[in-house]
Image 1 (cartoon, one colour):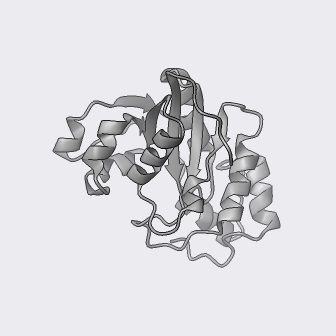
Image 2 (cartoon, rainbow, N blue to C red):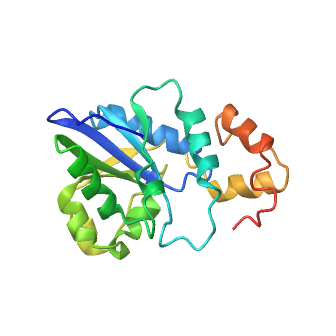
Length: 204
């Protein structure tokens, strides 16, 4: 996907993940980030080969198709396929540096969930990463974000969420033929059903 160089000072949220599948909490986080962090755009970055994921992801074409369905109608949501085009492990620092080189006028805000925040100290060259981006962390209802001490000392914004949805639970329900419509947008639920995604999944 081609992008024009970003205008100077343009604030772009960088929201990476497996999105297997994209669900309502992802969308709620992205919408809240747009409003609370004064973002001009949220760039959704489906992971290529997440080096910390033991589970095999669904094919990229399915994950992108579900993202396209879920984000349609919001022009400030843009799907970024940079990690899908790159071979080897997907390191967020590599992604940020490539985007900075391509769009030097932009200010990047890294959007991560609480689980990612808790494990951020294990990320590849995480100190260099946080020197390049503004950090924003989703806060699930009733659960304060927590991280390793050195990470917790780094400046970060908190984006409260009104819901907590698990992709693992969605895959488990889909594998068992159960209803998932309250967890994902209806068009994504239809896509999962039409393509029989997760039917052979173990729920892992």
